Length: 72
Image 1 (tube, helix red, strand yellow):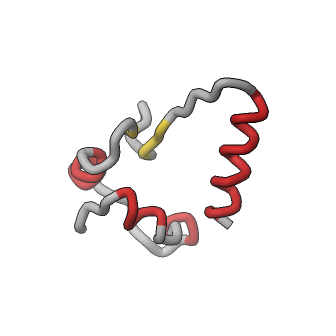
Image 2 (cartoon, rainbow, N blue to C red; image 1 turned 135 degrees about the horizontal axis):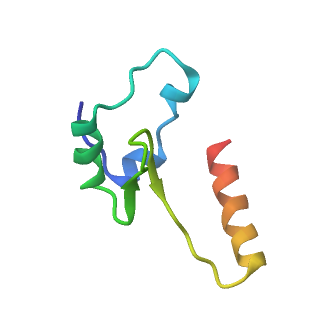
């Protein structure tokens, strides 16, 4: 499986979330992480994650509303 740039990832749909797609192996996950600044493998090894810190509540709401719009 190829690793993708952040720009390529933003254009993709989450096929594993829809079912029928095998999850990344540990090796594939680690290879993908090399392309993603600030992301890490969750402690259970099942997800690639990222944490965000915002200046105040409304900044966080604005950010996550923008993320929700893209995700939808």
